[in-house]
Amino acid sequence: MGTNCLLLSFRNGVRKILFNRPEKRNAFNGEMYKTLTNTLNDDAQNDKIVVTILTGAGAYYSSGTDLNPTAANGSLEDYMKLVQAFIDYPKLLIAVVNGPAIGIAATTAALCDIIYASDTAHFETPFLRLGLCAEGASSYTFPRTLGRSRASEILFLSKKMSAKEACDVGLISRVIPHNQLDSFIDGLYEYGSLPLNAVKINKKLIMHELKGILTRANIREFESLETCIGSEEFVNALMSFMQKKKSKL
Image (cartoon, rainbow, N blue to C red; front, side, top):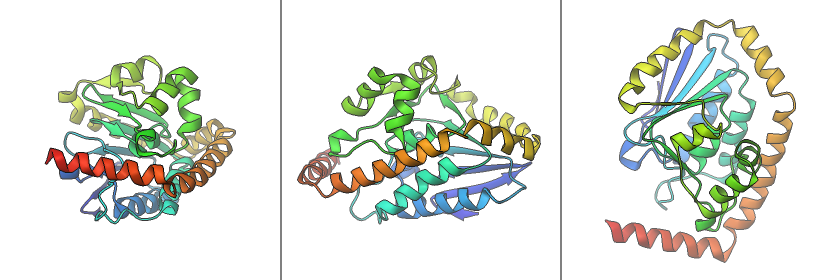
């Protein structure tokens, strides 16, 4: 099920979504944005699904948006719709971050109900280096979870946060030894037997105030991203990024 770059499976009440572009460090292209959005929105209405697990193939969870001009990245609306699909998802959403999570991968992971991470993982949001702004509702979730100073260090200065550091500040629930990650994911399937209505009721209670706040943050960030992408700063930063990338090849 799914597409070549996004593999879907279902077992015992659990949907597993695997980011599957390991040769591109699981960078999101337009197809992944649309397919993941549609999957979350469709699964929200599927009463067979109680839990959804997100993880990545290979060494990376995801390196964020594929900035290669040939990657068919889709539109900013696709970007905003994906973030909103995370915010609106009415059931248990678990990110198992198997490696580095960068940009949109880090910010959407922070929208999940539970995050577990490999000891090889780190979180990074290099938005300002590209002349961009916070996205994925991270202008709200990061200061709320990490505190303003730590959040600003990550969002403004692109500081990497290790899995241990993320656990210490409460961004993630637990650090898993990388060689135990597959068995750990297998153990999560037991939660597919949780009573669906009770899961949805508890999720609704927890998200009662948050959903509106996150939605408004998503809209504000979308409007700000439009401004950033239309700027000379972004064009220059993107050209510099692509030149550095070529020089490493």
